[in-house]
Length: 263
Image (cartoon, rainbow, N blue to C red):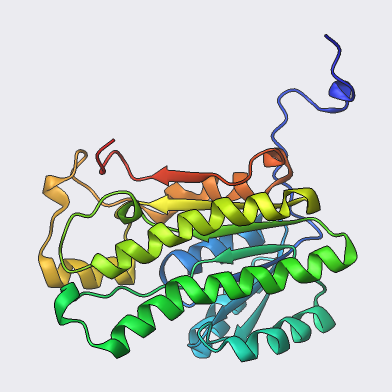
């Protein structure tokens, strides 16, 4: 059988060039978001590093710019949905339309379900579910209006598949919602050439993980490889999902958990 256009793809087809792309990374002031911003910039994207802690973002932007890549720091509270259109307008006016969105911002709950105050429930759901949904929809709406293609990567968690306890029930629930959101938005926007995927990391070194270990103790000895993951070990998965080479991959949640979770 002859496949039309197959000769146009090199062998192997592994294109990860992000030149000309504008990538918005939320929660970029620390942890995985900080790393994601640097990785996307190194692959050629113009990175918009967004978070509430602008002083940290400025430091990140300076680091990226000093290496010869492009980065702009943008103040963004993802739970303030009313501010999102204005922020995207400002980005478009200066750097162009966002074509890559990494929904990384998130918060833990750290309390038993029956002890959680309503204010904490609202904070976790607003940050971990409502905010990425609203932001993804606004980015997609703008892409669809102009016929532009795009990539959305939602950061889930291995906790979305299994609950290990430790007072993070709502966090687990919120990340399971992210998985389903990824799947259904991928279906809605496939015809528009907007790919929606997710990464579900296990226990990786980060500020959030430091806080968890402080609460529950060092559990790394109980993991199969007796270690935390290094954020650098997520680079290849992130680049794959935003790069041209993964054009046919959408609606997928990739577990990167070092074998930590049950199968």
